Image 1 (spheres, rainbow, N blue to C red):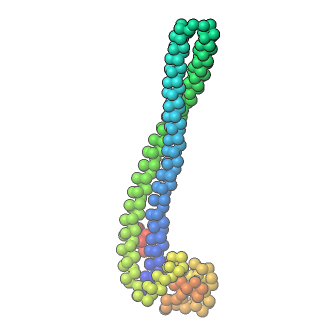
Image 2: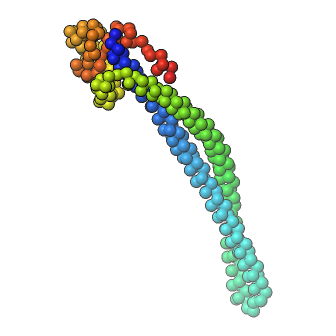
Image 3: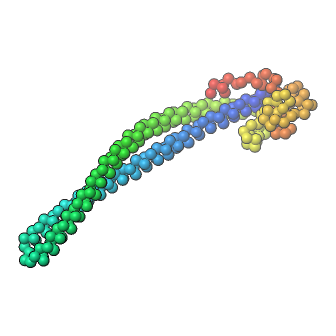
Length: 248
Ligand SMILES: [Zn+2]
């Protein structure tokens, strides 16, 4: 078994694991942002409804005040009735009183409508507030879980990183340079198994002569198509999973 090839295979396994952990690690903040965005949406709905409720209450207060002023006006108009000298003036004031009373009754109707609206809005606001508070608890709970998971993933990545460094140190500099280049250029896969004469990653056939050489296990070979380093899956020693990596 070629020690350097064995190192490369381990290095590949570490990279696979590392990429998988990084994806999960990055998923956490994304999920938290999603949860917060969803919560903001419901909070917006609640605040808009509460605004509507506050405005209705304000409009009701204003209408009550207007009615008070109108009633006071009726009082003043009635006093003036006692002071008039002519029938014409008397009739004119009576007409004014009727007009004012009409305004009062219109306002009373509006006030009643507003009261109904306020009652309805109060119920809606209370329901939204309850829903929002439940959502807040869920978001806080999930955020705590995701942060905890993030912390665990970070610790696993740190442990993996130390193993990664050890493996990198074991690979000869030239080979390491080529491998790192392949990681960058070939979607994070620098090493591929060959099964049934086919490169497992690019799925192209390895020429028979090359395949025989690969099985002899004398030199490190690269796939003639994708240039990844190759090992034959029939060599069990290369296929043994590194325990340290799997347990991380
Ligand atoms: Zn290939």
